[in-house]
Amino acid sequence: MPEGVFSLLFGPGAEVGTALVKHPLVKAVGFTGSRAGGRALMDLAAARPEPIPVYTEMSSTNPVFILPGALRRNADAIATGLYASFTLGAGQFCTKPGMVFVPQDSSADDFVDRLRTSVQESEPFTLLTASIHSTYCKETAQRKTVPGVRVLAEKPVPGGPQFNVGANLFETNASSFLHDPALASEIFGPSTLLVREASRDQLLQIARNLEGHLTATIHGTEDDLREFSDLIAILEDKVGRIIFNGFPTGVEVSHAIVHGGPYPATSDGRSTSVGSHAIFRFTRLLCYQNFPESALPPELKDENPMGIWRMVDGEMTRSPIGQPLEAGVR
Image 1 (tube, rainbow, N blue to C red):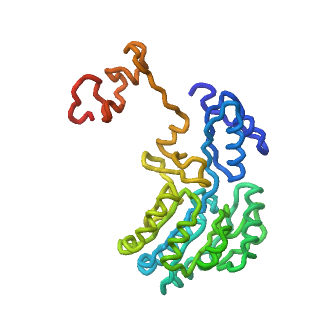
Image 2 (image 1 turned 135 degrees about the vertical axis):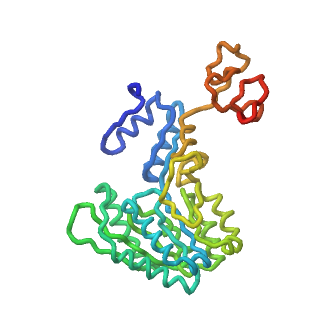
């Protein structure tokens, strides 16, 4: 790899990041971190003499909607998978499911009991930094004081490594959640919020009120999907990836993956930070018009010497320009 293709810089605070964003040779920025940090970088980039794009990944609580049919059929399996998902990596995945909407149904108690038991039996989790540890402790303590919210389960942490914390499972009802938008905010770490006793209309209203998120998850049956078809349409405008009967923490690097979403999940919901499409964040369009063949780069020469896929007259092809499209080559 040529020198300078990859560099790794360490520095405390915002000094290094600020210098990089302001540097005139930097033409685009990718960032993963807090909403405050992302906004600061966006403002710095916009204030440059030559503004540049900033692709930030900032804040996402990744809602999970459990529909009645799935709850009755798979309560234990969903509870087991949900616990594994919101505690994966000590809850420090940006796709961690941080709020879970549970409908009015007789199976809800079994689901909640299973989830509560998993939290109570959990081991301590180690967070990455002192700052993350401090913020998690502060935000979980603050949530315990919110009217209408109660601690459903928590795991106290005895003495041990400096950054150890216990999992927290909070509970509220749909009415309280609708009246307090702050309950939808992200807590970075092994914590999630159950929103119970949600009617169909309340679930749809909650979905309409959501900010942008990286993911949304639906657990349901085919009958559920027919009954809640409006939910899917609403979520299409709210997230970059919709998961059905799974969990959001698995992110596979592939051509199809979308790891992005509307603001404030990211600063530009048209992009992704994972997968083959992510490279286009650091490219721009350029057109060569009326050039002689000899002056064109190899990718644009008529004979296609690199054998790459190209769009010619609106069709994807690997055939040379001017020759008939061959079977199996399109």
